[in-house]
Length: 254
Image (tube, rainbow, N blue to C red; front, side, top):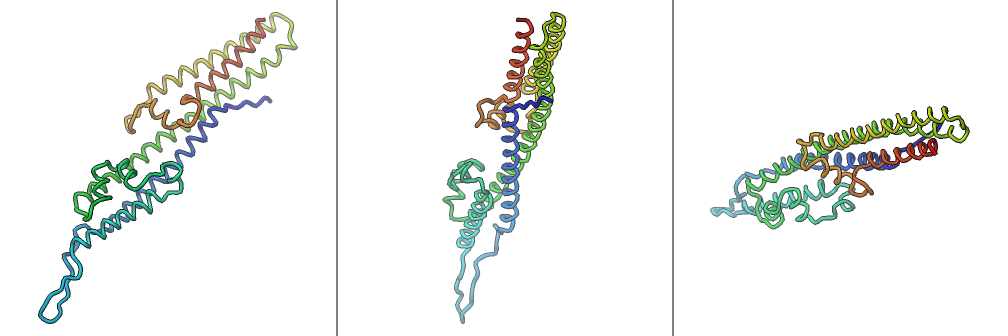
């Protein structure tokens, strides 16, 4: 039996699987970060004092406690979000740069340059981290849906192309006009099925709801396949399959 492959879709599947793994890792990093920073007491006790005879000595001020809390927050961020194994290869950003990307420039500036961890900064930081965690969960669901769709298209294209190649292999051993006509009619049906797949995929791209993630469908495909030669891998392999079918049809008709 003839075996066919869909090389562009296969590369896209690899890319989608890798992206799922990265998103899962980053989502878990934000989860861990949120657990760690939940232990930071922003509204801690007042200054610690020690009585020596008739006098009172302030040992630790509220400001110094808060400064250490802010440092704990920065350390937790470095060890979780910036500590994932792919961070350097995928981002390679400084603490300030990554915080700005995830939390916005004003909040990043207060966390990196600030001296005290005030409740407003802490709460805004926690909210931003929750959004980043949830965004990765939603995006991973989209990528998983796209990965499953790719697999279905690859299977259907394999069936069409395998039949086309097997039917085309009979052309050279056939000289009767009627036999060639039957082969051509089979190829014509396969061509129609292939074209239908292209139309279906285009409608899917333009009609699929992406309300639960940022960006349009096309923008998300560009994000997912940015390191590939095309952002429409299914259509690329459909075009290749159509080329194979039309090649064999030309042989029948020539």
